[in-house]
Length: 133
Image 1 (tube, rainbow, N blue to C red):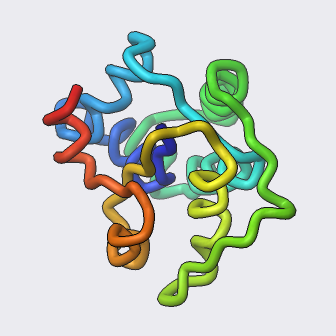
Image 2 (image 1 turned 120 degrees about the horizontal axis):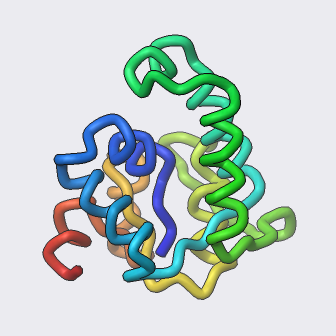
């Protein structure tokens, strides 16, 4: 499973919501997470935003622990040579490349720019994944 950054962060900020259930399922090892180094960097960056830190009440050490947990408990994939294109938002190319390069069965996202590619790639919304868990 590849989880887009929006799903990871929403799950941390709203542990009782649908994305939160996905994070709980991952923590209970109900699925394997595939990530790229680019995603890890994005997660670390977004977690350091003052607004996010205030919501989570996390300092730098908590952020580092979570990113390290992601690193240690995920299948890391290399995306440097993977051709992937998200026409509506090229900044999401690395997320799609992670799906393509990984053994993951799907990408889970709430991002409309990625969801429009569902006819070509296995992409689910968080609600669709929770219904399958």
